[in-house]
Image (cartoon, one colour):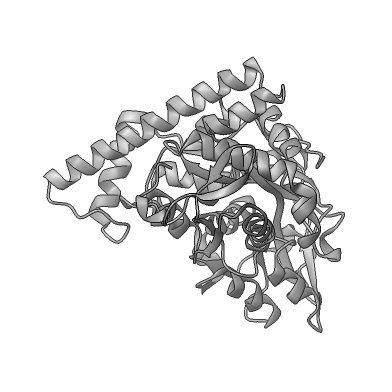
Length: 403
């Protein structure tokens, strides 16, 4: 089991018929007939979550008669949109992405990618995220980040932006006091530091891009995340922008990251709330019972486990689970009354937020507003509507405040 320590942090489809091409494939797991085809939406090629999906879907397709296809998306906004619109039945969702989606900010401020009632089907990985510099950098700690520091700023995912904004908040710096070097995708977010065009970036040491960077002539280093007690006010500013992470010593990824204290994220696969419970139950069961068949195909595949899913629940689930997943946990004697109580709270919160977003979209259309992050009038309208009807607290902070 991948052991989790919260360090005091509060709370650690029905899909369009086009996805079901042809008749279900005859199968394999008891009497269940797998769909002949479904897509699994992941981050881009070269990320750890993409590699993990390739590992298990290859074994699944070879052994069941069904066909699972990995569909890499350019960014978190696209992953959300593709799941909402039925381009795939499973999608990688990090807690921070989920919170931003439920707040409908940035690229989630659209009808396709906005707040949606999606549920966890299974744990994917518990992934370290931290601040990386080149091996020959003069920056030795977060305290060395200051005016004029060149920082990679990736617009491809809100959680990458938030990681940098949280760093600046810790150092009590504004955007205009540093040099933000904008990049368009996750790979460039790392390469720009290796090339020397930026001095620091927010990324994961288990990603393929980090292994490539570590093999470069200058190598890479990682900056230690200060403990809360080191500077409580700075840490609170940081955590306000980085909810849903677990600070702990890193044990996975490139050698230079191991032993360094970083934030860790529970990364899960989501399905739509209305997804077929039989499909969800049987896929969770297959992933657990066939784990040995794909575990050696990717270094970090051991993290995809029911043990880690239970750890997620024990530390305070951040997203609701699908009923098919709950059924499997109940059969294994792993579902508790406390888990159900929190599940009910999370479902109620999600459904209220989705209804609120739909109401706001309808009201905005009545006023002739186009819906999208590029329309400042809509963004302002939605922000004010959300604040008036739900309060000013970000969705993630409300989740972390649950009992």
